[in-house]
Every structure is written in C-alpha cells, then in structure tokens.
Image (cartoon, rainbow over all chains, first blue to last red; front, side, top):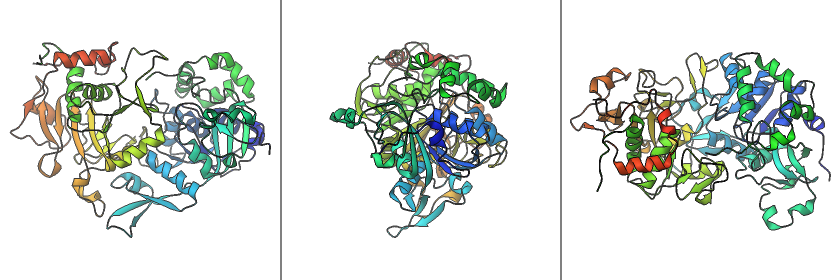
Length: 291
Length: 267
C-alpha cells in the first residue's frame, strides 16, 4: 500500500463542516504546511480540536472555523495567540473550552469507541456551566458526581512527524510526542506530513522502532513536507522561529492577517513559503529553546 | 547555622516565602509556572524538601532543578525519567503534585481565572489563555498561588469572571464532595503571605512582608481577609538561600519580574 499524496490531494479529503484534530502543542511540532494548504483552499465551517497555537489562530483569522474545542491557544513565549484572541473578542467563533486532560480523555474515548470517560475534572468550575453538552452523571460504585467527558470523534487528524515510510509507519524522535498518537487514533482519516520519507527497513533496528508510537493502520495519508512544522518547532531538527512569530503577532496590530497571508501563503507553494521566510537551511538552523 | 541576609530584593523574599509552601510535602511533583514560582520550587528542592520532583518544563523529570537563566543549548541536565505532556496527567490525577501558579483573578472562595475577562462567555472583552489544566489540577492535587501585584483587580470582589478552578464554594460543591477534598495551600503576593485557614476557609493573613501594614493588604483585596492573632513578619532570606537562588538564576532574571525590582525590606 502506498499512502503518499501531495499536500493538495491530502487536504482535498477534508470537506466543509468536518471536525479536524491538529497534533502538536502550542508552538511545537504543528503540521503547519498542511494548515497553510487549508488556508489556500475554499474549506469553511470547520470544527478544530487542538492544543492550540498559531494553527488555530491562522485558521480563525482566515474564516475557516465554526468552532474550536480547546483548553488553551497560546504561542507560549507570546502567551496570547493574537488572532484567536480577535476571533473570541469579536464573538465570531463557537467554543467548547475544556481542561487539557479532558481533551485527552475525549480523544481516548473516540479512539476506544466508547461514548464517554468519567472524570472528576471540571467539577465545581465554569467548564461545566459553559458547556451544556457536558453531562454530570452518577456512578454505580459511589455516591459522587462525575463528569462524562464525551468522545471527541474526529473526521480528520493532521500531524507532523520526523520520518515516515510509504505505508504510513511514522517516527517521532523528539522528546515529546504530545497527544499525536491519540489524535491519530481518534480520527477516521489521519494525514501525517513528514520531514523525510524512508524505506521500511529504516525502522528495523529496535531503537528506531521504539520511536514509532502508533500502528501504520492509523495513518491514512503521508505527505512529504520537509520543514513542514515551521514556524513551530520540530525537535530535534529545528526550534520554533521566534522572530517569525513576533512578526506574525505584530500583524494582528498592524496590517492584519490578509497582509501576512499575502506575504507568505496565498498563491505560494511550500518552496516559495520557505524562500519567503529565509530558506530551508535557515529553518534547519533555528536553535531549539532552552528552558 | 543560618545567617539572615542584611539586604535582599522583594523578588528574593517572595521566592523564599513561596519555597516554604513545599516544606513537608514529601515526594510530589513541584510545578512552578513563571520565573519566581519556578525558582521557589527549585529552592525548595535544594533546601527544605529534597524529596521534591521536578521537570525541565518539557519532557523530562530531573533529579536536580535546571537553572532558570544562563543555560546554553546542549548543556545537558540531570534527567531521571521521561515525562512527556500526556504522562503529566497520570501524575496529576494520581494527586502527587503541588502546583504554584499565577492566576489573573482570585475570588473569596479561592476560585481562580486565567481564561477570559469581562463581556460574555460567547464574546469576552479580553480573551486570555483558556482554562488550561486548572480544572484538573484544582480537584486532583495541592495548589498555591503567586500574585506579583496584590490588588483588587486580582483579588476580585465578586466571583471570578470565568471560574477555572474549584474552590471553597458551597454553591458549586459537587455531590459527594466536602471542602476536605479541595487543597488550596498558600498565596504569596508582593505584600504578604496568606492561606485559606480562616473561619470556614476564609482567606487568612499569615505574615506581612517587612514594612507592609494590614491596612495595605485589606485596602488592596476586594473581599474580607481574616486577620488573627498569629500574624507574623515574613522571614527574611538567609545567606544560604540567597546563594542557592543566585546559583539557580546566575543572570538575574528574577530582578526583572517585579516593577522597579523593590528592596525586600520596605520599612
């Protein structure tokens, strides 16, 4: 089986109104080249599920989003995502705001094909008050309230990985896979962009296979997009592009997203994008953050 | 043998006061979000509670805390286990954690807000981070709060605009729960140290920083603070503590956290 597609072919699997999960975390290992392909498309009315960063901000700014299911949307070193903030403050998107762990439980429930997972998380907070779809249930085993975190079934998930073969074996060697395995399992269609395409034999030594975190049956499509996480990080290959994020953040105050998009995304392919931000060599030389 | 420092900055006083919140906690994951809370947790791990656990703020558990400044890429660190973000929840829900966090709003119930301010939930006036992990933290393990600028904007008169963490609020208490299931420890501000051990879990003044009055605290808090007879002055850092703090922050990032970097003794 050969699962390789172009970014355009891969994104053509998404339809208006679908629920799309996005892997990564804040400014880390986001499938940004696939996000840019959505930005170039006519897609609209999407429900986005993410540990959000500029992926969510850009999709909101471009009017692609009906609803965001989130616990945070942040660029970390710039705490507040400027375009998500605008969308919320304009009242232009619906939200389901839950705890970070509830989001994980929702993905697990979807992956395991169960309707909900009981949890104490959310009790006593406005997470319950603001989400009328969250049910409080009784337990057959005690006399306490429990939150029934519903399955977050995804039509499509987008993730960015280090290496993949044509059959969809995906490797992430960075120190954290975040929740990418659960995003892959919770979705009907999982599109993985990758830094490198490798032969299946690449995974044969056990220390290589140790960094494969889900079965190839969970990966539907593989897209070869080197530097495809930029401007987010892809440890251990490159860090997040602080200067580019600062520039992106500044456009929210002056110029607007249209200006950003015209400079970097609209009418450009990924090679042209990379040239506009300084080229592949420059991206690959961006240092990883030190905390 | 400990010697009290003759001169110290307010940030250092707050780091030492906040470190005390981890004393006697045993083997728990200490999480300090922000420079001063992280230095507080790190100081505690280096002094009053060497059993504490800590991460590198990314994917590894450390046997000794990283410095918060002056580190360079590839320097290495004392890793003791993998601790990716998904595994943090296994720790959180097991309860063996104490987080020191800086909410934007804190109300009289000890409920906090980092999500949004004003307007309506559908259209907030100011969108902030989102609830992040606050709901789960608050119902699963101990939490303390760090407030760099003690004011009525933080300690709000009514309830928080978005209640992100459970507090000592009878009206919101879930079925089968009591206040004993909620563990809010201390609040360290630029004026004082407080806890939630007043009558019926009221916010209580524990110690005033040197040169600060009760009046300053009550004037800058949007609800009643319990002031009992046991009120003390916040202990000045020792030379030993300052040496540990300097080693953990050689570049002095702590001095940029509070407006004008005031002296710790304001008498």
